[in-house]
Picture (cartoon, helix red, strand yellow):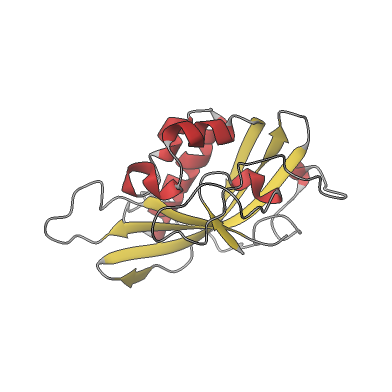
Length: 192
């Protein structure tokens, strides 16, 4: 399993080379380098359903209807959904800002982040059900299954399933509103 910054969809490359990552993200792999290798017998990513190989977990637990508490796991899921939507709209700078530390947790500069995603012709995303929230050192974390799929500009399909960890600082004195908002802390590609 690799934890990596911005380029979920290039998880096909699983390359460990790339620029130095920020402190705390030493196991991240910069997957934006080079071409993604071909996957043998990859089905059309748009046809992969939850519970199938290459899809999100098949969690059929009903989601509560009504207003969503922004501090809840569902609030974190909304941030991840926004991230996928911004990628699909090719608003890469805005998507990067949804990472912790004003985007620096992605391990890429704004230009690197944008260049990494610009190699995709189509970007689609799916967000799974948030896991249980856990607290540590004044922060709350939640893991959420996340999938990016679509086509590279060379026409080849890609599919990447990952676990996104989102973090927010608890309501502690001196914390800012931005720190108390959910932000992407890490994304770990899952073996297919």
